[in-house]
Length: 282
Image (cartoon, rainbow, N blue to C red; front, side, top):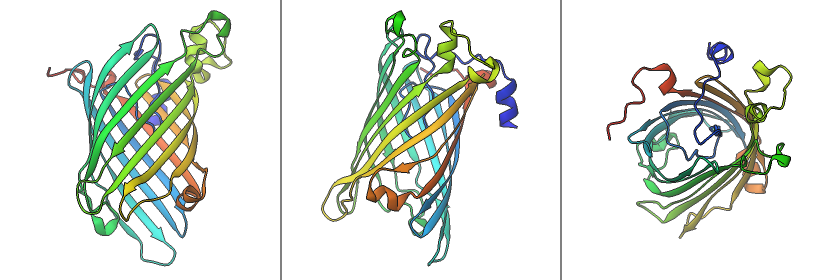
């Protein structure tokens, strides 16, 4: 049903920064405050285990520059030598402040407090201690390049980096860094370049993400870096974005944690489908 809605809706996604519509990547956090719902079922094959997970989150703007996002995930893990387990992960709460935006240069900078209270079931794999800390996010479109570089202007860069210390138990402070590169065929079409099958092709944005995660600061629970690359394809039409991708390990730690993966994402712009969703209390 969602695919049908995406295919038939008008291409009326609002430009988030000037002419640029930044996609919502699969892993990298988007810097722009929005009113949106995200649904992200995925599957991951690990060493001696497979994991089906379903993540959902909702983001609400409080002001034009401030939003708060609340999300949670459900995991179902099947292990070859142990009993299967399933349960809720902890809630994630992330207030976000966009402190700089330039439509002319298609640039956004934001800072967030990424809060992960230990509300899930530790028996099912959720963290036993809460953690949280600052997260810096920025995104930049290359639309301000000279006209003779029109084939590079649809490129967008999105990045987030965070330091998430634990709030109890042994020190186990997590560091994350994600970088996404995307190429908007809609941006290319808007510049005057004709595309084949425009109803389909102008909504496509191929992308690739580079992901780093590590418990880098701690006394007993330090982990080696987990390095992955996440290629994928996003399709935007009307108030909807649907994305699909996979993950490839870049080092031995990541190859133990991900041997095969399928990631999907459905993003719904609530401003477009719910009257009054854009109301801001401040």
